[in-house]
Length: 362
Image 1 (spheres, helix red, strand yellow):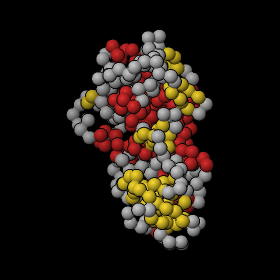
Image 2 (cartoon, one colour; image 1 turned 180 degrees about the vertical axis):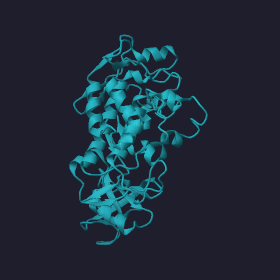
Image 3 (cartoon, one colour; image 1 turned 120 degrees about the vertical axis):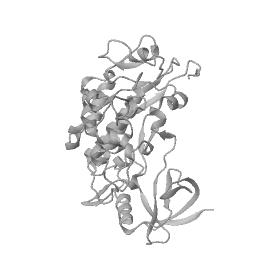
Image 4 (spheres, one colour; image 1 turned 90 degrees about the vertical axis):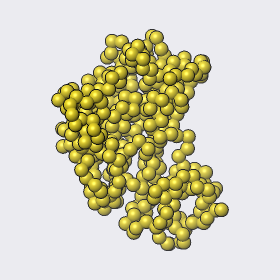
């Protein structure tokens, strides 16, 4: 049964069926507004949160809405009453980013997505961070479930009401975080309430997401332990900078997992960016920015070459041979050759005509 709410402008809104439920609130369909959904909180937000949402709704610019499911209007039980929820853009036809970077999920749901598509997703994630940072805001709770990706490679950030928001000098904090995406210098910090995060903290999570995408879902702080005490807990390995793909990984206590994508697949410039993001120097504010990732990934996309054996094998042209063929010889297939792939357009990727039948890959 539909329920009536009112926007901050006094307009009535009919909220219909529940689409999803979380710990803080639920998302509902909105009658007669096919491009919007409503998030309603299970209990009325505190005044501070209401103020945050009101600011966000009154500053929903076109740039933010291009990359973020940003609040567009607050919702109230009565005209002028407390904020109980908000309207935001409806995100449809997209999957959580781990459905794209996980080889198993990609084989099933994105079988025609080659490495060039993954590079485009990575650069679009960097663009979403760059847009948010340019407005003075911080994601804070970076995690794989907050980034939705479509078959056109476009990315939308969700759960925006948890962001750290700068309301013209007043900071509304992000109070949550996922430990596996939390930078080393914040691993011992809990809770996050009252702590001001920086773009450099976000840049750790951004680099980690890009690493996941380019390296088949691998975590940069996970590998083969070389001494006791290493590999027992991911949080401890992050805190102690045990980057498994580092140039000095032997002294850090890890080596990369066997038959994993080698970091040498990347040009030295991008490999150096990961090293900077995941080692000690990055804590002082030197992690690569979203804009730097955006520029570097765009440059890398322009330097791809195609394998003569498989049309799905694209790789940087600094390599002398196809890394995907080398991995297949070790029994690891990251891409299925269907005789077709995603083709690039000015706005992203579109699916080319299918010329082959999908084969089952173990």
